[in-house]
Amino acid sequence: MAAFPNLNSDSGLKKLDEHLLTRSYITGYQASKDDITVFAALAKPPTSQYVNASRWYKHIDALLRISGVSAEGSGVTVEGSTTITEEAVATPPAADSKDAADEDDDDDVDLFGEETEEEKKAAEERAASVKASTKKKESGKSSVLIDIKPWDDETDMKKLEEAVRSIQMEGLFWGASKLMPVGYGIKKLQIMCTIVDDLVSVDTMIEEQLTVEPINEYVQSCDIVAFNKICKRIRESFKEGHLCVYVVWFLLFFYIQFHMFLSTVVLILLWLLQSVLIFNEE
Image 1 (cartoon, one colour):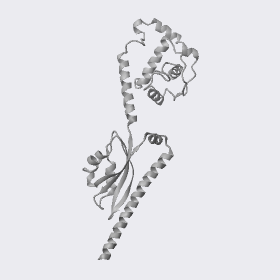
Image 2 (cartoon, helix red, strand yellow):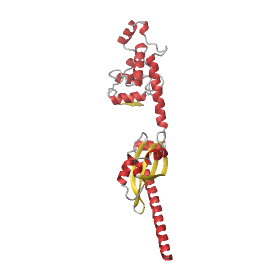
Image 3 (cartoon, one colour):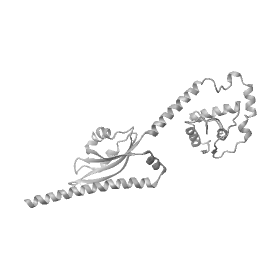
Image 4 (cartoon, one colour):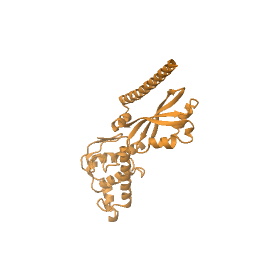
């Protein structure tokens, strides 16, 4: 069952316009009582800003003037609307029928004739909107963990992070970050980001932005530590606010950090052991 908020508000009209983006009628494949319910809930015709809703409104208005609508619908609810009677649905309004009979034949609405320029333009806009919407939905996302190393222990890591985050582009979203010890007092910046695969290339971003002027004043090199695809189901769970998804991502990030910490500890221990052995030999 379709449901709409108050259709005399901008939010209501926007939702109706989005609903009709890929549909000719509110429900089903022919005009029904559901269309009349929504039609009656509108205090005035939608403006041209809402292309799909305006097109639908004109079509239903024409049907009511000519033959009325009698098909049953699947059900629709509109906030603040009243129930439509059988007579109002099946029979065109008397005044409208009289006015239609008085009009010239040239002004009659021809539902089966050639499309007007306005209708062709509206159809092209709808097709373009559907194509753009489909492309946007199919675009995948990835979660990337990047290591960014400074030149030395005197590099201002705060300014380094500010310089990294200053890189802004469509489809790039910076996330959490932390400083990780490398050795000899030097720390590296480890930062997460989410990218839209069709819009952002991490390799290109590193080569053309992170390691060139003016950011290379702070950045010596960059390494991709982890690169994970975000599946559609996980993205939808994020949108719905599922707590379990956030927990999984937190545990994954903690797991990566813990293993990197262990690796660092092992390297330090090996270095210390080597130093002790060399000292004993001397």
